[in-house]
Amino acid sequence: MAIHPEDLILISVDDHICEPANLFEGRLPKKYQAEAPFVSEDENGRQQWWYQGKPGRNLGLNAAAGKPREYYNTDAHRYDEMRRGCWDVDERVRDMSAGGILAGLNFPNFTGFAGQVLNQGPDPDMNVAMIQAYNDWHIDGWCGAHPDRFIPCGILPLFDARRAAEEIRRLAKKGCHAVTFSENPEALDMPSIHSGKWDELFSACSDEGTVLCCHIGSSSKSSATSKDAPPSVPMTLSSAMAIFTLGDLIWNDIWWRFPDLKFSLTEGDVGWIPYFLWRAEHVQRRHSGWTGHTFPDGTGPTDVFLKHVLCCFISDPIGIELIDHFNVDNLCWESDFPHSDTNWPHGPEELAKLLGELPAATVAKITHENAIKHFQFDPFKHRAKEKCRAGVLRAEAPDVDVVTRVGRMADQRDVEHFKMLARGAGTVSGK
Image 1 (tube, rainbow, N blue to C red):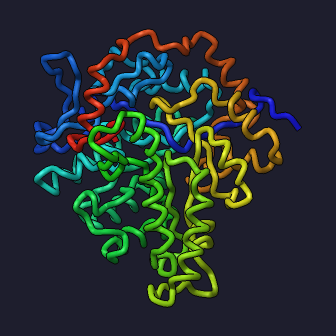
Image 2: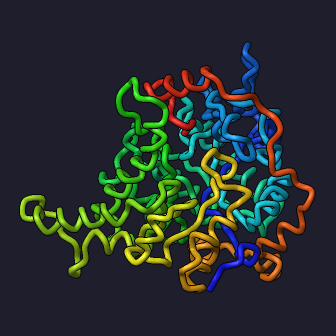
């Protein structure tokens, strides 16, 4: 039975905020107000976030929604070179409606996808104050302005597992059941997830039903190969970071100690996952005699993935061809607005074509039901379900111009900046 794009209810589990420059105003204890992160403009007119002498993760590709691809830039962007919906919550909702999107989980940008910039200041107490101020702005200000349209997602003081656990419990009381976590904490000079040093954090997440979201690039590393590789190489290999995260997760022993724990692989697509699960099963069959790795109750790495790991895609036909290898209760859709991979405002049309052969119940799970369940989010408490469909939402924003008419054309400056990031001076795609 054909899917009509306008009938879909769409909740994205991966979007982003290009944080407004006044984010921290009125949200910090007096003694830290002068130390708040800030936006400054350099001699070339670029606007950049800074915290304690460290630059934030700003990049033009993080604010590309609505731009022709010839206008994608890779250096630090300006607010007047992006859609207002990138940083203005009311305009974001209008953009979402124009794209037929009911709701989204919004990751941070300038802090790094795991909040790593705010974790790296010299004063731990000040870092916690900044992180809590960010979270309060995000939950109360951004999400609270339109509670039917946003799934809250917090950042954590990852430099201290105990304090991170306390923040998870504080956020849960505020209705937030998603937090960012690094795809590879060791790359940020933190303990690995095999170390046992994250147990307090994992326990808090398991108790509160909070999902640990591992966004690609949240280790401040990229999938660069050779130093002279053209930009298309790391862009093609961006999902490689999610492969590493999956490997760490399926061979971990945390699941037997925290049986309700859930992780999410974000923005890595899914078509590659069945192969690596097969490879993991092969390794267990052939090599467990010397690795000594055991799974309780006759389970294996695939069972761990199917029970504990959520994943998502924007438009991945290979993943849909292989959908029988997934737990469809853990598979979600993402828009990635306003980043350069987003298919906004055409998500409903692309999904209707991609999912057209699947049962209606499976389509509903992927497009919105799984997000509602896993992140304890109930948009229908605020808005009647029939008014959540793409066609109805679009009718609420008929005047939104979905073409972004600000910015500059890409040129060699963008290629050189991207190569600089891939060589290690930064991170590909600002992540």
